[in-house]
Image 1: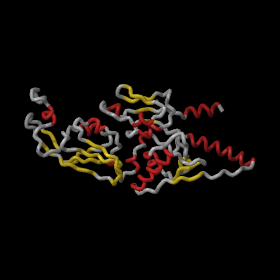
Image 2: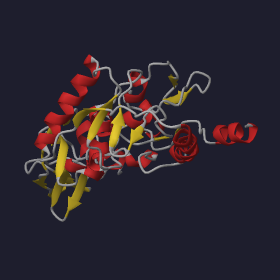
Image 3: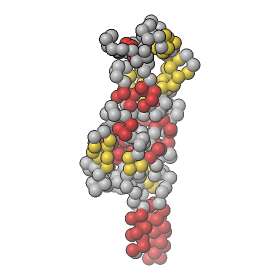
Image 4: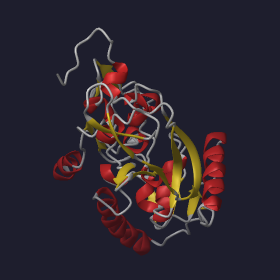
Length: 301
């Protein structure tokens, strides 16, 4: 038995926040998805970064699933599956994002063990099925687990042997257990977008800060135009947080993916003479000169 205990203990892996976390690379980041979802108080903001207090962490995996950047490594250990069904448990509530991903990995139903779904589960399942309708997918059903028939002594012994094998199999990395980088909806529904990213070209100075901090490649330069690929957006809000002009807005919205384009105009600054690009055809000054105090010396002279 001691060998089994040691083996089971070796299966436990502490959750880890990787460098993909917005707060590790963007000093203006306001992302708190994992912090808000953790009901054990195991996450805390330390200066700019978010850190995990391992003594309070239960490895439930809620933070892994909630992170829009898939920046937390770990496994959602509270989830239990049986074939293509998620077993209902009252000690946690899945998110719509979680169920949508499970659906694309083959989930057909939520299995009850007698007790009906509580109100939280009902709400999430209703919202998920509404979203699945928008995604042209079949709804997730609720089914009752079938009663287990009484076994003879021989059948019981055989069942215990096979049950032990099933236990071992369930504790190994199974196909249902997703790694950190697999919690992105865009990977499972490539023909749709879950968010619409809008750019106010009257405010935008085309400083390209959003280009730098967006790991999802939402903003793409295509010859003489800027292309916004909203289907890549995960709502990490890095672009919104970094934009000093408050020129970017993200709206939750499920629809067929649409690539939005804005023409880019090549310009020469009237003040410093440097070449620059702008979304406004009438602009005559580069962003540096626009924001520079007239009494300051030009950085280009």
